[in-house]
Amino acid sequence: MKKLMYIMICVMLSAALFGCSTQTADTDAEQTAQMDEYLESIEEYFPTDGTYRSYHGYSESSFEVVYYDFEQNDKMTVYKYIGAMNDERMSEEGERTFIVEYTVADGQVVEHVENSDSLAESENNVYSKIQDMIVLSGDIEVGNSWEQEVVLDGNIVTAVTEITEVTDDSFKTVTTAEADSYADGVYTEERTYTKGVGLISFSNTPYGSDVDDTLIFGYAFSVGGEESITGLI
Image 1 (cartoon, one colour):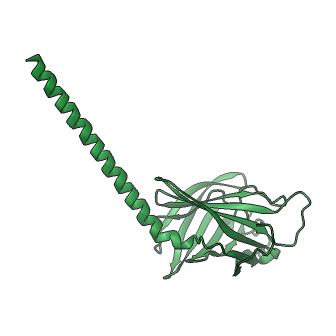
Image 2 (cartoon, one colour; image 1 turned 30 degrees about the horizontal axis):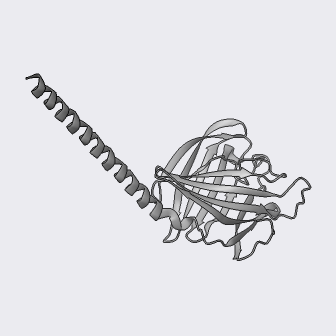
Image 3 (spheres, rainbow, N blue to C red; image 1 turned 90 degrees about the vertical axis):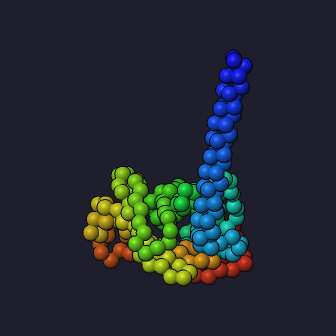
């Protein structure tokens, strides 16, 4: 009798463990499929062709970027780009370069910057004021929006990003956050991304625009080439 009960218990435990393993495998497979599907829908906005892309804008803003690395595991995909400033300001303290990473995970794309430019105002940004910004969350659809807590000029505020325009090969986002020292008390950032190129235009509200409404800033994609303009990357 005891032997029979022992056998039954073993069978029940085996069935339970097998059921858990199967369920876990199914869940992992479903998550992987969802990640692959999301990545496929946005990957054209993160080119890996090795083209050197130059950008020019207000206040003599100028730089170039090029794709240089790619990492992927079962939880995320990371696109890596290296850039160099080209605004004719000289530095005796080192090369004016930076790295931008776009991490795709959990249906979001997060931009992370490591700025080694000795003349930069921040080690975590180039021109944006928002560190580790969620540049995309969910599907590319007009009206889709998301929030994140960010540090802006030393204060923790809520930034709201919304997709305002979508075409067959591009989309535009507008980010707003209530903050002092900006026009109308709001920091605003606008970006446009295009398939095969990536970011093609950027503009934001300059600090102090609440006093001087003539202050404006922005830059746009200018040209792509096979060789570096700066010779630094």
